[in-house]
Length: 236
Image (cartoon, rainbow, N blue to C red):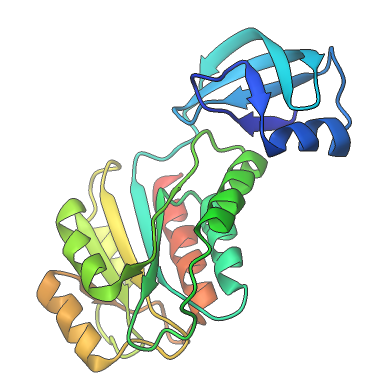
């Protein structure tokens, strides 16, 4: 069943670009059913009653609260990659359950531009497609030093680093995380990796360097691999 995120105060009326999607792409008509979500975990099972050029009105048939969201909240601070790799990262990290994505500028970041509205749209569509009941927050472009300051807001802060030999994500999740309500911040490097200075600063700020295995992952792969590992740890 098609599903759309709608501001809570606006339910059961749909406006904006979703009108085009429902009317012209999906070709739904009055009487067809869909799911409306307000971003709080509630799902409103609804039926279209009226369609106009700029809005669609629905009747709420019933509603319920879903528990598909994990209590462990994971924020991915992703140093900006080049080209459209950030689009892919946001889409897939959303599907895998990221709670927040922080586009980050580091010493070796190649891309500099911010596409916040585009990224928010990608996150919304990925949440709808994957059956989530919330949309991850897409933070404004943030520099490396400011991300380090956010350590205080999380129970655990990790920084994957190809030169780390001892600590692995698996060992951290096995030995340090005993509660499913843990909050985790993960700082992913750019194509060129982190400089030694950045690693030292991250350590001083309380971040734990971790290895993701014997192979070096691309920046667009690292966050996805970590989210999959965390899902395996907590979604069983």
